[in-house]
Image (tube, rainbow, N blue to C red):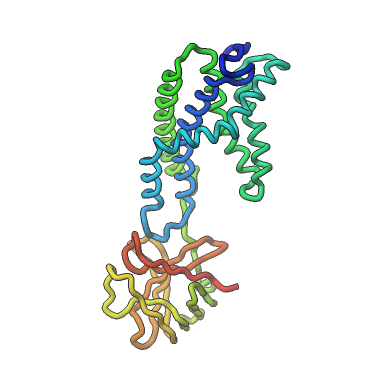
Length: 302
């Protein structure tokens, strides 16, 4: 992209053309696999999977399988929401300000991002949505300016965008791995709960568990493994009565928790692990297959 602007092409005007639209859709969709991968890495690193499932990997695989159908549609939506308004702003600025066109294309996406960030405040934080939308608008806007300054055919615009998509995806994968390994993206860590913090009432799903600092426990409709429990069976029993609890570490999960034993013959001893956050701690247990079992979560009352 040089200092000047090429005139509008047939089928368009001085601000954007049919060729610009094609280039915007191509790069708008091409950048989404890398953007989605980064989002998934950051989101998955900070979530509690409760030791179950594949951490969202199955959903990510499904998205990749349908990507060839989804990307052009998403690229089209992104084009009309962010890219074309950015291109118009960049070329209007070129008439009054001059200077290198690449700089205008680089800055222009901030305008639509601010507008959409303001409109979506009830759904997302303004300080989060504006940087994200700006980042999504930069590459397609730059690509439109780059394609307009070169004699590329339509297929040339698309195959170059596809090649760029692969490069961006593997660059995002490498950056994501590096960020998680170096601690730049913080991994989820279960809370550390002392006896004082564990003491009190925990409830969830109609169940209640009262823990005393002296190790005594009282349960109401609390799920527990039935006698002769088979992990392939998701069955559980609801128990009520008194019992005892003590701190316990689950080596298989790498988590601390408590071992709960209720008096009588209602259910087996149950391992409840720590989940949630320091500010909002949880006790949880998973019955059955880790990938398709029944998850019970108790939250502290008050």
